[in-house]
Length: 92
Image (tube, rainbow, N blue to C red; front, side, top):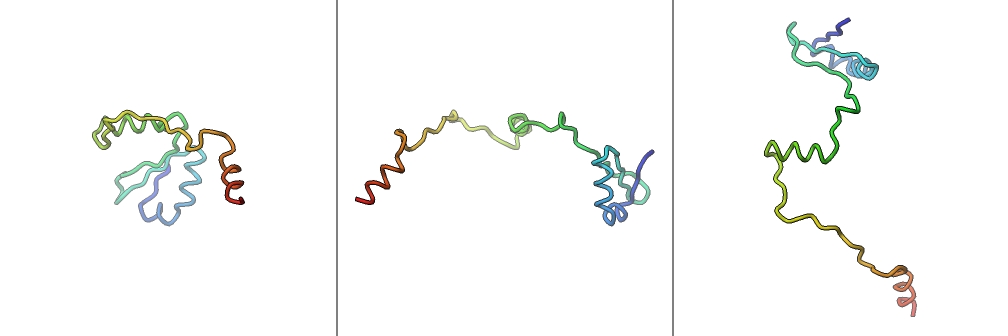
């Protein structure tokens, strides 16, 4: 069963449309009787990971990778207990 809403109906019944989509239905939105959009659920497998999304953006030229290699950041305090030493020195 195809569920079709006009733009006006889809806007007026947005919560209902989203509820249908969350329940696995596909909703078609039409403008003057012509289908213009389809609203459907996103399955977990279709959601790209962050790395996949970044690679896709680089491939399309929307994002340019850095020429400088990424480096890992190291903690500012190399010895454990830096805060307690700081507080002890401050109290002196």
